[in-house]
Image 1 (cartoon, one colour):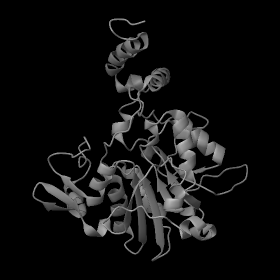
Image 2 (cartoon, rainbow, N blue to C red; image 1 turned 90 degrees about the vertical axis):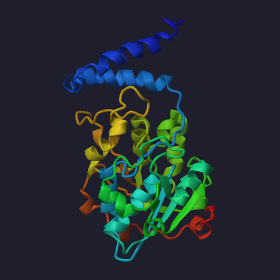
Image 3 (cartoon, helix red, strand yellow; image 1 turned 45 degrees about the vertical axis):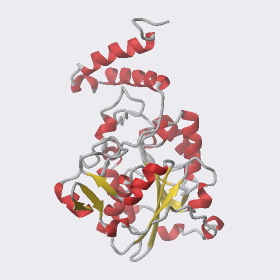
Length: 332
């Protein structure tokens, strides 16, 4: 059945969309209105044609980068830090993370694995050269969130292009691959940090749940997983099932840290609902960073970063997968 060329649900959402966009922020933040927004977003997700896109920004979520910096700062002087970024797209997130860590801790040896399923986009990321006029494959204003000073720190300018500085690019291994592939552990080995942002929301829920289970296998015991851009019900379910420890530091700031995602709720399937501490499960639901492989008793504490378990307590023996790592790095 269709009404004026639209399905009844589509027409209902269209009418509600017009109404919602004319409400003041005060009204949309009221509990009954927000609950109604959650209902509308559920309908949007059920009808969504989920598909991957490569839109992204440099320094997309500064609060998440700050948490990565704080956790990296726990490492001993001159130690090695292994990080994987899955669905690395045009490289903006990879370079943002490396710039953040190496600016704060130049003594660390950071081994970065960057993975994406698109050969074309991965090659763009590997080159680290971006046009100031046209976005090249990625239809988004990728420098929008950078200050002039940050542009100068991260890039060398060459005419109408900018190029990532060599000290930021150092040590990156580029992989053409799928985060859902069961063999990914044999390719990458175990990691101290795994970043899987803005990937799983583009999958159907059952596929996203399976993929998240697969991604979790990459994280060293005591290591950290960053996973935003995912249906919150799925993330909370997997985190609960596998006993992940949510990191509370900067939790609300990170949740609200990407205005392009928060602003798209409730009308896009990737839109992120308002942070709600009234929920009994808010600490698990809204955390986007987790420590994995750490056991605790029934009473779970949520310490600040400064009191997190030290890395020395969780230094596993090198796995066979790491000893026999298969390199699929693209040519440098």
